[in-house]
Amino acid sequence: MNIVEERILTELSEQTADFEHRELAEKITAEVIAPVMYGFVNYIMKSAAENGIKTLYFLARDGFLMQKIAEQIKAARGYSVNLRYLYCSRVSLRLAAISVMPTEETYSLLLMSGVSVTPKSLLDRLYLTREQREEIYGDIGFTADENGLLSKAELGSLTERLKNSRAYNSALDKIGKERYPLCTGYLRNNIDLSEKFAIADTGWTGSVQHTLGLLLHSMGYEERLTGYYFGLYNKQNPLDGDYYTYAFSKNRSVLGAARFNNHLFEAICSAPHGMTVGYEQREGEIAPLFDKRENLNGRNLFILTIQQGVIAYAENPVGFDESNKQGDLDRMYRLMFKPPKAFAQLCGSLYFSDDISEERPFPMAEKLDDKRLRSLILPVRMYRKLIHADSAARPVFWPYGSLALSDKGGFYRLNWLIWGILWLMKK
Image 1 (cartoon, helix red, strand yellow):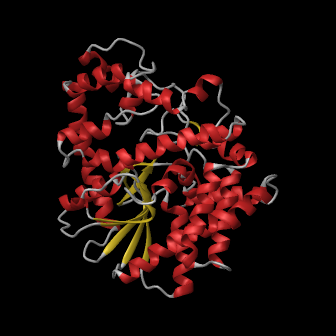
Image 2 (cartoon, rainbow, N blue to C red):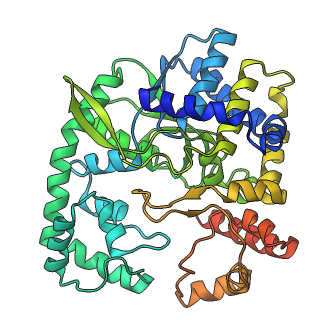
Image 3 (cartoon, rainbow, N blue to C red):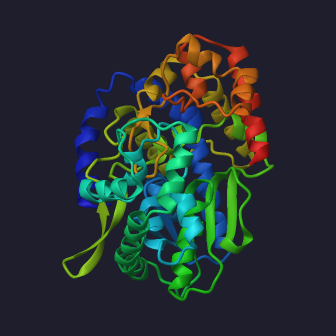
């Protein structure tokens, strides 16, 4: 843990003792979250030992809490696997991999759609200066408001213009050449490529393992990369290595995955420090460079109280039963699918951004007006998708939490659940 993390945690730990919702946080943690988190990391440690893994690298920032649990398990069970924390992110890896990634894949990863995309947020994924953005705008003849929300059609048009832009492609080339040596230098200094190792993260798409693998293989690493995850929604490419999941994967535990909310899970796991946006030479070594902003939820006392409870449980996991894995998971799925209103209110105050640059964050859950409620109804969603209509500008990151805050029940939950299952089957 670095100095920034220590300062934040020390400062906030003193406040959690008087946190007004401490009792609720502790109850939910003890009954639901702690057993699931402990079971997840216990699975990783056990599997790593069985597979001869010498070192586990927990990826920032979601690996923060996972590593702390692993340290307790290692001490209690005598595992010899080494535990390390690797500072990286989708941004830090993708921008460095531009030099070794096929051009079309670079476009796919850096020009992907999302909620509330603007021209500025699209270019902010490259961490360009205002002058650099204006040069690109001039090259493609863009004269509109860079902060204006883009419709799907507008986004498609803009991305095609960027792909054909000399200025944009020149920026990509420059960024790749600048970032590649720093990123690979950090990886070489912090990963022992001569031994059998694995990475551990929360999961969802597998894109981080894919990009990290590209970088490692470009450095001469020839082994298959192994990754441990809570869950994965997509089918993974076997060429990217071996993927192990604890809760769900493509075509496995679909009903659980449809009730699960990965945004909320990330918030619970995440470290207090800001996102790793790159690397820099500092005092003779290559060190991670963090976003000037701290973690969106790094000072949230509800999350910190939960994390403290999980760590305390890991120190003394009384009552944990490895054979009750599915029961523990089902309790967490129910909590996320049909949350008590008080829990939804506390988690709704968390923030999330689906953009790799973390621009334009929105509340995790909030009360929905009639228009947004109607947008959750299955026939409406199917019709809007059929005619390629744009979604509401304001996203619904945790729909079940938003329904609880809106005092809406089974009808809307069922509609979202069916949509989720259909989405998962299509992935």
